[in-house]
Image (cartoon, rainbow over all chains, first blue to last red; front, top):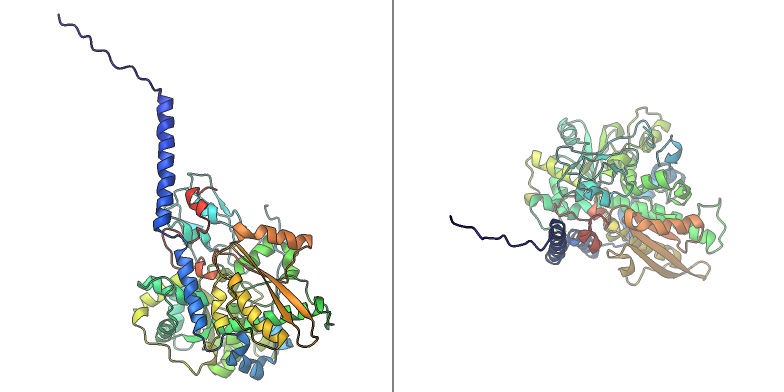
Length: 107
Length: 419
């Protein structure tokens, strides 16, 4: 009768240790991948490009200060008088509401 | 509902439970912890705490938060009914973002085509940039009165509000202050936001001087990069035009701004009407005074823009001279809190004063210390600009969505999303 003398290699690492090592490795890969995509993709790109667009619009404007907008001056002359006039207060100013007094806010 | 008045919109942002993966990304951007739900479970938005800023919406990787106020068809019906003068009030930040919905690069400046496309659709134009210039005249005059009174010792008719003065253009910031720091309300500029000024102006001056029509037939549509503007338009006090006409003998009750479309809504509207923005004829309404704006009006959409615009005018009013260098670099850029000082010599008294200003964007990350200083009475500033969204209105909750999210200003946040 043939004898089988094969012995399985003893496992030197416990299940817990294995999971720990894999976990740490995965975390390193994960952070590395995030950092790498950060280099490739500038996450603030959209804000920067849109902001630059508005600054371009400013730079090419004929008048660059609000008080030099002739159409606003004309509106005051024909209609509202001057800034903070009673009519301007009525149409262009407002009040605020203390919403914490509107009823039991959960805080 | 608490925290809201009866007429106000109670729910604007809602999370689609089929799309939510419970990943908590929205919580990393919510300025008021209004998103509830455990990690892994479906989240929901608490409308009482919510500012309606839409930051969760533009940053969710799964597109779960939805803007539930859809009035595109209502606006199209008004455009087609033949009786209504439909006025579009277009915010600065829309003209550098709406192109993205039609395949253009982010930041492409499409003012001409945008206004042209709106005219093709049947809109009349009142550029919110014009109203931004108007806002600077009002808010700036208010600030100058306070500076003259408190810092230069000039007698005022009645004591003006306290310094520092806060900007009041951002509806999410106004709601934040009303909900969470009501002690700051006396510091808020009493000036309305540019859109609300635009609405009041369209139904008074615009109706009589420009479009020559009955104010009741004017339907004002705000075109905004912002979901919180939908809430602002529903606030009951913004019916000044109706009150104005009431005093002059005509009845009728209507809000100053009837509805608000976000940049995304506008793109949908144009597509429904088969109007291609990139092929639209350039704007041809040059004789309309309400479509003219200055460079100061257009930078309102950037963080620091309101401040820069205000200082350009304050410098002129106090010193009698224009600023030599118009670009105020200390208030530009994406740093969380930007501070600057501008020394002005008062033309009237010859006295010198350094006007100290601060600019905050991203309420969640950066507002706390500034507010604490003001509450404790040791704030060094005269004027503080606050915008809720990181980067300002260009990154508002109504802007075109990029699936990567657009508000990751701090890099560590991208690596440790839960921090």
